[in-house]
Length: 317
Image: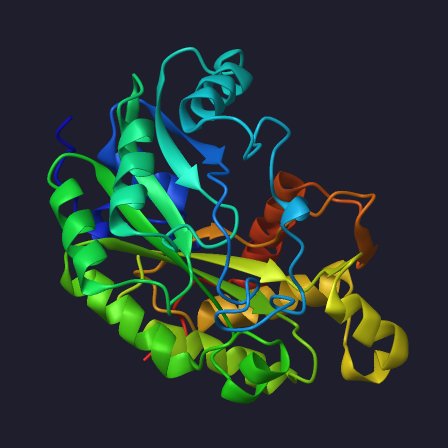
């Protein structure tokens, strides 16, 4: 299925910030929904090849939908995911979202088989592949570049921080230079790049956090997911918080809203915002518990943007 040509972003005329949903609507004639898939991949930061225990904040149970189980085939998960969303939206296309763990961490042949199984399902028009900056190769990027001739393809990199001291503290297993290289290499192959950043990691001051916006703005990033720090049960970070709460600043909802807007004003206006917050299950979340759904929080951000007469990129240079 041939994808439409990307329009210039400046034709989208964002009101206060460039919304990723707005970008997708400009590319597809029908609504597009991501279908999460757990293909059973591991992570080099867990299986011992790079480290053990994973990143200190990570518990993959926090973002896997109920239908998303590695015991099911990719096709089964796509089918159940489509069924889950179909009652809300009758006519739409789907992106197979390989979300859990490191979804480029396998042999090239196994990876191709998994991706192509998802792409063979009716109305699946592309892939979004979540991974680490240290788990992509030129061979794999060449393959994704070929796929972009027929499908929508985005590679999502967990960056989390642009501060090497923080990356070491949270046990990421790579430095920021590795993230920069992976992002540039991916974009040079003509592939869309998604990125994640966490605001409020331990020992990062407000000034450190705002520097991330300037650093990310220099990179060819298509879309950005901004997440607040969440302390989740069963993680190393939750244990650290119980012993050293002074390492952490847990923002109130209003504090975080103003922090996110300050961040947004320093961010390149051509980077589309996919989300401002994430939401862990209640039974796993320790703090902060704001009692707000993602769409409610986004509405508060949009209201505050208007109150402050703020907009994405106002302080970007």
